[in-house]
Image 1 (cartoon, rainbow, N blue to C red):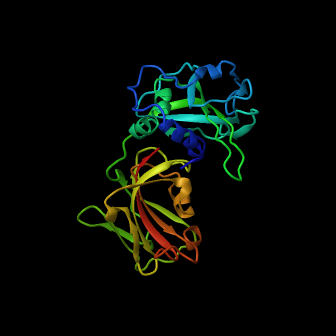
Image 2 (tube, one colour; image 1 turned 90 degrees about the vertical axis):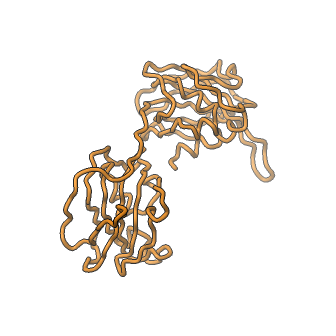
Image 3 (tube, rainbow, N blue to C red; image 1 turned 135 degrees about the horizontal axis):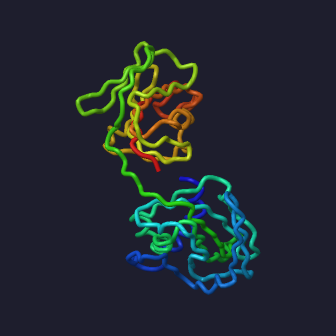
Length: 309
């Protein structure tokens, strides 16, 4: 997952332990914890792509997770089952030093789904009903010193709701216009169940990555920062040995495009949802000389791009 989880997970785990069963979402964002701790908190807007200036009385200490909208935006209210795109600056409650700042990069997606509602109702209920443009403050209790380690002070996260959008359900199969690939590539057919089958006979070893549409989808363009939902099958270019297939497992796969082999990251970025893509990947963009299990040498994949988020 992306860096947002590295910041939020500690808070989410703590929040899971409190609050009991999730309350039904209210029309407006719900506060939690000792929100009087935020009375001294002041934010200064520094413009787009910059974290706000944050002032508060130090040290800030809370004994329970505490969350509140501290400045309300003027956008639409965030709804259940949407994706909230957020930016975060994390500060030490002890001295106000910056621990993490994601404002300069692309906003990170936070899915306001049933999993979050069940696992962390306080976070869920704080975001659902907030307005786009709002800044939320989340204070996470510190931790006592463990043997050989320093104590961890309270962390203060200021989280801006940059935008929110509905989640588009993933497709069940590729949808778009058929594309005739050039000669010399591995050939792809479908069996009676619509599962792609790859034949490598006569295909030359790639001198560079090949990313060829077989079906050109008409959905959203894939970005390197996206998490994809796909079906795929992979074989070796030499011998055509199948080493992996989500079709065989009977379920789609979801993963961040930044967390896979370079051939996938480079070959799928810029493609569109609904596409079926043939990837012929040189070994240096796959698993190298060592390989991974049966996935050795140059590799061939057929990837159906069914959704992004």
